Amino acid sequence: MDNQMKRGLLDICVLAAIKNKDSYGYNIIKEITPYVSISESTLYPILRRLEAANCLTVYSVEHNGRLRKYYHLTDMGRARLAAFTEEWKEIMAIYQFVTKETTEQ
Image (cartoon, rainbow, N blue to C red):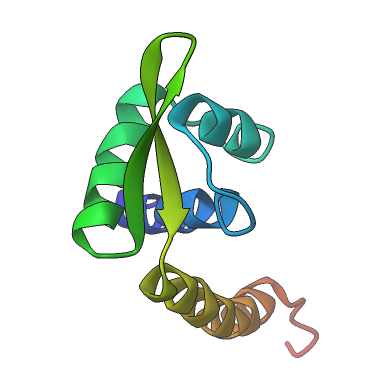
């Protein structure tokens, strides 16, 4: 898969992982892994990039004597997910065109 496309899709996966409930890094990885492989070294730069783009906010909560960073989806993050859903319709149309069987010879 094209690296730029995969990067964009991973961003969307991270946003989708926290769309219904705030979450922290390990849990985000656990949520995404059944669908696509993602490591901590890949996740944390994505989280920083999404925070810089105002797609999510970060807050800390003490857990077992340590601070755990939680990520919260912003309105801009929700808008990005909605835009992806609309764009995906066009991508699926392209996929159907590319994979259709040619019956004309």
